[in-house]
Length: 341
Ligand SMILES: *Cc1c(COP(=O)(O)O)cnc(C)c1O
Image (cartoon, rainbow, N blue to C red; front, side):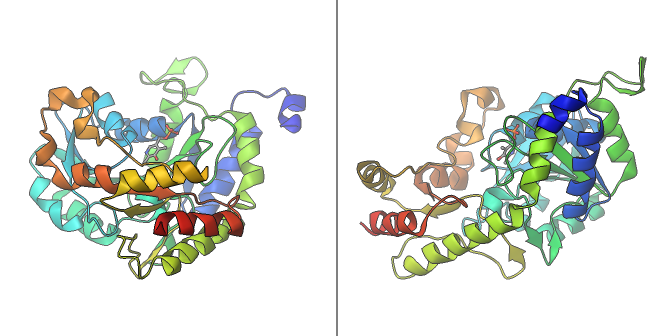
């Protein structure tokens, strides 16, 4: 950060270029473009693919609302598909039934740090000439069938919100892609639709990655894998400890290398478990208590709660345990005691 302040270069510039290059390499992608946050990464990706009013985009019924907001924000319609409750990710087998003549893209979310099953999604997309936009905000560093998340689909969207596995000291985001056309379009859109100063090719926005945040991310990227290993150790500690508990635990398919952004279990007795956490003075959270279709924000979409029963029921039963590189063995042991009651 001192280096950035001394340089006097406060918008884009070498610090952002360096992080973009390092992030592309890390994600095994040809291009990375830094933007202001994860929501903008999604919105600008949709715009770069010319998706807008009249178009439909398939999204998971259970996700952080930003996924839906990006789609409705460009004027398109989010079309929800229910998850596989064992992995929490979009159920590929249900996607075909949601495709219509207006569908333009499939937007899977790699929820809680685990990749969605991409191959069936990519196959459907090829068959129906759809784009695949990945919401990888929670999945920084994960692998699908051995290859890093970063360019399996047409474009991949990242958030470096402070609570994410690689967090900035404020808002930050990026896209990665192997498609030079999409990289160039997002690069232009994020900067007023301009490639050359004062020449505006389209009506873009100001959504640039802040060089101070880029500098922070460059430092933290060096330890990301080490932190991920710590998350993995905690996740297997929890999974072993709860193996005989009868609780619904996150299922990891053999092709997935998750990065455990969250460790989410499901229990019908969530209220009691949350109360035990509170009494023990240990933070636990619910991701997410109200699914998008039950939010006031989407009342006009007129999707009844029972139309997406899995999203509705999971929202009532999910609970996220403390996980992260800062969680000590001692805290993890207390978490196990609290969960087992
Ligand atoms: C965090 C997150 C976003 C949005 O990222 P911001 O940087 O907060 O805008 C989008 N999708 C998912 C799944 C997220 O977890």
